Length: 102
Image 1: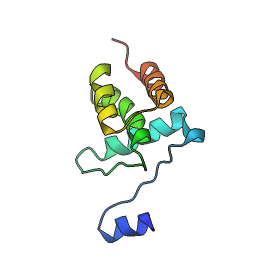
Image 2: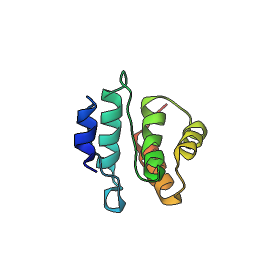
Image 3: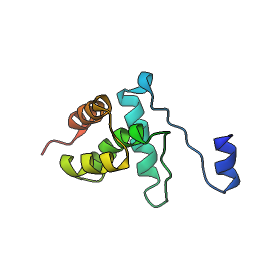
Image 4: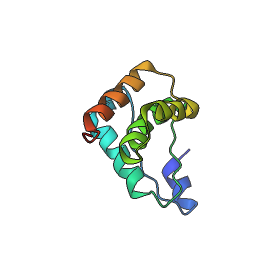
């Protein structure tokens, strides 16, 4: 399936932010946050094959940009599909380093 073409045919914008083993870095989460923040007023279809990576990548946005506490952000990420301890550690490490000081 040509995902970009299908999305564009439906009148939506297609944005691809790869989140794979080689992409578990700050730049990836910076980009995810940037895309989500820029589209706050729009419906965003944010997906991967299992939703595991979506759940992990969503945590920094929920905590840093939406002000959610860690427990609630993890609960949402888990409901979305997060199952990987590695992705959880990646997301929380990034978030803790980027949260504004109280």
